Length: 124
Image (tube, rainbow, N blue to C red; front, side, top):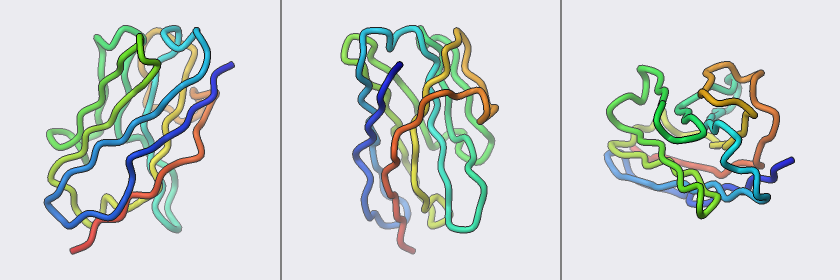
């Protein structure tokens, strides 16, 4: 089992940047592929990035490709999401999640463990 705690959210102007962190508990962190998801009010939760156990395989949907960067530090039990060129439509609660798999999945149902989320608000 792994517990996840997100941090780094906040209020930023359009065009700005934020870096989210997700700290995991447990020594099995490196066994999990990790994902970042977001959920805006009255919208479904959607994936924004995912990374394999080793960090060698990464997935982004087109909506954030070129603006968001996911990375992980297995020694620090942490996964990061660097978000640049933020837009008002990026406003959402951002969640990290863990999937006991080698490769990252874009399927939300693949992820077994979830953090509580961190709010990101982008003003225009």
